[in-house]
Amino acid sequence: MKPHVVVYKKLPEHLLQRLQAECNVTLFDRITQDNRADFLAALKTAHGMIGASLPITNDMLEGAPQLRIASTISVGVDNFDLDYFRRRGLMLAHTPGVLTEATADTIFALILSTARRVVELAEYVKAGRWKGSIGEAQFGVNVHGKTLGLIGMGRIGSAVARRAHHGFGMPILYHNRRPDPEAERELDARYVSQDELLAQADFVCVMLPLNADTERLIGAREFALMKRSAIFINASRGRIVDEAALIEALQDKTIYGAGLDVFEVEPLPAESPLLQLPNVVALPHIGSATHETRLAMAELAVSNLLAGLRGEPVPHLAV
Ligand SMILES: NC(=O)c1ccc[n+]([C@@H]2O[C@H](COP(=O)([O-])OP(=O)(O)OC[C@H]3O[C@@H](n4cnc5c(N)ncnc54)[C@H](O)[C@@H]3O)[C@@H](O)[C@H]2O)c1
Ligand SMILES: O=C(O)[C@H](O)CO
Image (cartoon, rainbow, N blue to C red; front, side, top):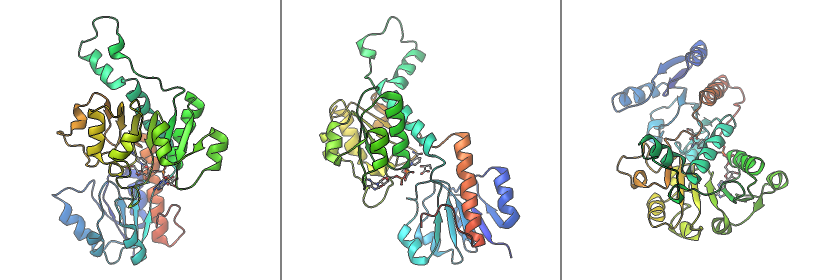
């Protein structure tokens, strides 16, 4: 009998067909209040599930007694309780690597647009406010030659460091769970304590997974350690930062600006003070969102799922 798979995010047609060739598929393009009960009902007989952008609670999984593998179309696995997966002997697959370069590009876009005020000044032009030659009121700050501090020197952190070193001549400081000799050799990156990085970097970029160790890692104390000219970049997960403390640091100019792709609550609520701050560039969690990269992620997630259901080695298991 074919295994039953629940898909909870829209997949390209050819990937759906690949799944349907081997599995009975229940398809949801996305989960909403209206179809949530149907989704939970489908999980009751599911052997596999594939999707993204939905917290998968242990309660949901308790209702899926036959489940063998969940395949998330993301590298981040913070929508799942990893200990629960270990306890139940379930597999959790994810999509590292294929989104590294696209996400590093997004981070560089945040660095450049925040430092050079690209979004704010593009809006100034569109609003018809460009009436004469620009002056100091429109100046930004240099990116090239400035010090980049990376908290998290994994796949994406290293890809950002390569752009900064080779493209922008930026000295690199990093803090990680463990030193990275290759980054030190190739990129002249220097391993420092987190506090030293915060105090010395011109751009502080967080590129960590969200877990119990990293939740609210950056708060009022950490912003106070940064230079007043520092720009804070976060494209990893919103909950790594105490967002209220970030807003305060931006409002009272403890730091110069922030480039953000992720937030405590997503979508970012319309009433968020972040939206009122000219020194903030806020993006709607687009780190990996290019046609090519999202396709590669979906392909990898489908391959992971099918391998798990066939009992073959799964290319990328988080648990
Ligand atoms: N904005 C987006 O669309 C987007 C896209 C891709 C990834 N992400 C996020 O980025 C994260 C990182 O992705 P990656 O592929 O680079 O992962 P990775 O595992 O390769 O890198 C993470 C690095 O963080 C380090 N680390 C972990 N905990 C630490 C701690 N407490 N202190 C210091 N260092 C610590 C690890 O040693 C590792 O080197 C993902 O988990 C995801 O949440 C966001
Ligand atoms: O973790 C990831 O892969 C990104 O946040 C995209 O969802």
